[in-house]
Length: 102
Image 1: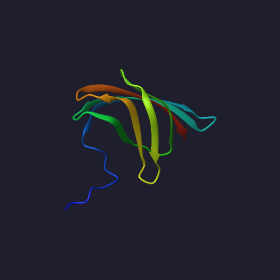
Image 2: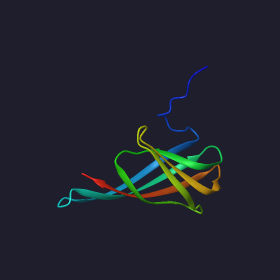
Image 3: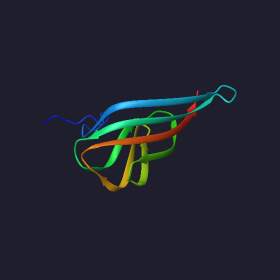
Image 4: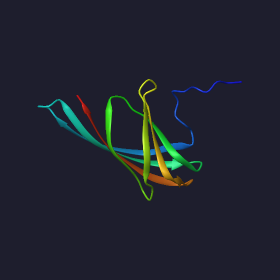
């Protein structure tokens, strides 16, 4: 039996497009950003996992869904967003506001 790799993200959600805006603050050696991801949900779910490293998530928005909680696994560099409502099998727009250090 093939063992699942804990570092690989679920194949139930496929990113289609990314739009990334970054604003650096050179004096403070920080940045803030907004990432807009168009995703194709291939199977109904209540969670979305993404790779992350050394970022602070400020907010997460998924059209018509409310965020229940976020959990970050720093060792695996994965963050999981849990939503109150089922995310239906179709295309969605995920918006993430974040900040970090340069």
